[in-house]
Length: 494
Image 1 (cartoon, one colour):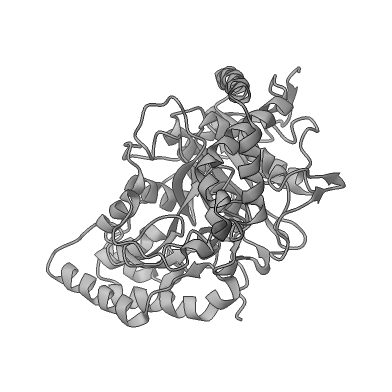
Image 2 (image 1 turned 135 degrees about the vertical axis):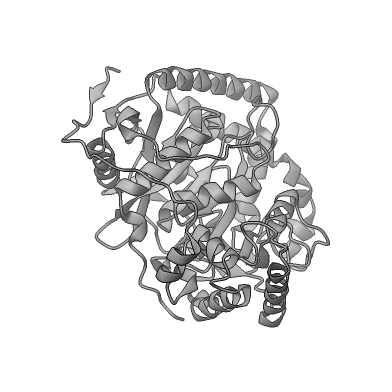
C-alpha cells in the first residue's frame, strides 16, 4: 500500500528536555506535599532516603488510602495486617538510621500481581483451586524487588490464571477502573493498573501475553511497559516467547526505575528524553479497516500524535504488507497450544468444574490442533518478523491504539461486539495487541486522554526488538509534551 502522509508538522516546539532522577534534600523538603501517596515513586524514594519522610509515615499514608478506597476499587487483595506492615516499616527506619540503605525501594509498599509467589502471602492465581495456597519462598523477580528494599503489603488482583483482559475471579471478585470503579480496569494486570491509577501503589509489576500490561495501562491512565522478551529472561533472543513480565508506573521515569530493579538483562543506567525531531513514526490506525474500534479511539490517538508531531516528529500513516487473518491464526494456534499444561485440570472432574469457560474452551482448542497447524503458525510468525524488520528500516516506532474499546462495565465478562461487528472469541476484542506480542517487541502504553464519558485510552508505541532504551526514552519525551498523566481521577469511596 502506498504510504500516505498523515500529519504535517505545524510548528516546532523548542523544548529544554530534562530528566531529574533525584532532588536535593533542601529542594525536596520545600516542595513535599502533605499527602505522601501523591509523590511519584522516585520522589517517594528520595523522601525516604533523605529522611524527609519516615518509612512508618509512608506505610501509614498508603494504608490509610487503601482502607479508604480499596473496597470500591478492589485493586489490592490479600492485604496484610496493619500491625505487621507498620512493624516492618519501623524496622526499615531502624536500618536507615544505622546507615543500612537497602536500595531505592527501601521501606516502600509494594503489591505483586497474584500470578507470582511472595513468601507468606496467599498465591491464588485467581482460582478457587489455589485459594489456600501460601508459598514459603519468593519468585526470582520478587527476590529482586525485596532486595531493593520493598515491603510487600499484599497482591494485586488478576483474572483466573491471568486469562482475559478483564480482572475478575471467583476468589476476590472484579477490579474497577481508577476513573470509574463500575467499569473494568482491564487485565490481566488489572489490579496493578487500578492500584497505580488510584495512587494506592507507587509502582506495580505485571505480565503481558495479550496486552496484559498495556491494556490496564490504557484503562487506568498510567504507563504499562512490555519489554523485549529477553529483558526479563536473559535468554537468547530466539525463540521469542509470547509472554513476559514487566513494569508499570505513574510516569515513564518511575517505570524505567522499576524495570531496572526487576530486569535480568541490563537495560542501561542513563536515560534521557528522546529528541522527537529525530523520530519517525508509522501510524497503523485500524489496519485499513481490518480492526473494529469503538468510536473516538482513533481520534484521541491521532490528537496525541499531533502533539508529538508539533514537537518535531515525522508521523505517517502506514499499512503493513501482511494478511492479518494469517496473523490471527498464528496467534490463536500458538496461544492454544500453550494451554496443554492445563490439560490435567480439564481431565480431573474435581477441578474441571472450577475452570472458567474461556479456559475450558482454550484447552479444548489445543486438543484439535496438529503439528501441521503449529508449523503453519510458526511460518506465519516468521513472515511477520520479516515484515517488522522491513517496517523498522523505515520507522523508529510503530503506533497503534492500545485497545479496541474504552473501559466497559466490570459486570460484562468481555465485549461481544464493537460498533456492530461481532467478536467471535472472548479475546478477539484485544486482537490489536498481538502485533507487538508476536514480534516479542518492546511496547510502551502511553495515555492519549479521555472520551466524553471520562473513560481513559492509550496508544501503543512499538520499537524494534532489543531497542528498549529507545522506546523508553520516547516515553520520557512524550511525558513532557503531554499532560494526560496529570489528570487524576475523582476518587470514590465504598
